[in-house]
Image 1 (tube, rainbow, N blue to C red):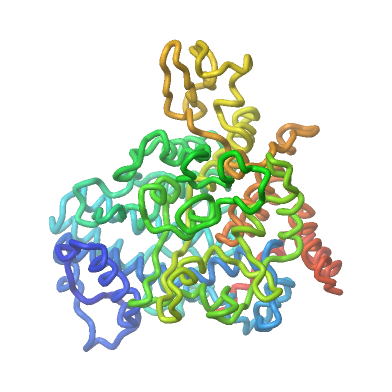
Image 2 (tube, rainbow, N blue to C red):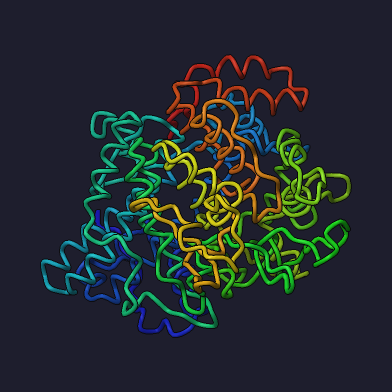
Length: 581
């Protein structure tokens, strides 16, 4: 079967609005899959030139956005930080309690394979176009790598959620053939990872689209390259899952050193930088200068401070943090699923923070000795009418104050996640000090044995003096003058205005525990938690690492099945969903 989309060109992408129009018009079209023959164009009518190829790319991203809700729900509700509300369906409760039925709508993998089918069709046609000289080798390499990486990302998610899945890389006759084991045998997760690593590492193009690409547009500070998957982040994650830690760190470091988006200072780009205490024009947890002991002066807005990571427009500061984020626009399909899911006033309020999550935030201490992590109760969730409400996805909706304006974002990758994943890899590669620095107080403060001020000679301080990918230079000094690339780095916890967490006992395990705990505090509800727990539990061959956290969530809710669920999860086979079509 040749899967097709309606013909258009990216010549018309001269504003962000028209780019989104193309994206969402394709993303919402059911004719992208399984339309009747009379409604379809043949392959030679659709894949005629680079602009048709661009239309295919945008169409796939539109279809891909339909996975957003499932991605967040499966990775968060199955883990320890999110739980159900009085409004939740039985299917959500099943996920939270790890007791799913075959008819649970969240576990059907078909939607993932629909996007894979579109990827396979596009990749096949890109091959044909190249052979027919319908676009250049460079145009082919970039578009092929982009769609190939979307497919790899989806397969990684399938492996994480289902464990054993069919790995299909060619267009198939009908989508339901996926469930035919005789045609498409299912690969165990480890074998799937091997294939994904081999295939994705072999891609000849690993950057974002080049600056001359017709798919890249910059308008009013929005850089469309943040719309496309970051291949180096994906490769870092694949190698991290495989245990190839040096390779994982290398891929992550490549992203850390990327050329910034338009208007972003190299010193700020993906650096997890310190607070601007005078202006508060930053992405840090901070208070008004000289009023740090007054809790009411916490910087808490959509345009300044840590909360603004999720509420601000796509300006220079947004570009300095976000690596991959897909926008939902209320004027186009697909609709934003997160307002209905999370909002209590404008939606159905189907999920909330678990008591375990709230306790984690409240177990941390700020530098001003306030006994809580402000990222939790002040920013990630708020109490609304007596109920805890997850806020990250609904700040823009709340600011619009219009029930019909339901804009928002699918949060996929940002600088803090990059730093935590890099630190995880570096720690496993025995770079304990570096991992701890990026987690806690930053390079400059950690590699300054004489505690030199910037007015002193810092020539031999504030730098790791290690080979790539562990080379960081954070020098800031005046005699002689230094402003090295990493001098603004303050660490993930440093940016959150928190005291450093100590290393207790075995450095590797202690730092890794601290990194995964920090990922919970920083990245909660962004779709990372279940995969973090599975990855570390698999690595350590320690099911209790995962099972104990789920037990704690359920136990704190008074769930009578908490012990039964823990016993079940002590068997790794029970971490994975049934592959039920």
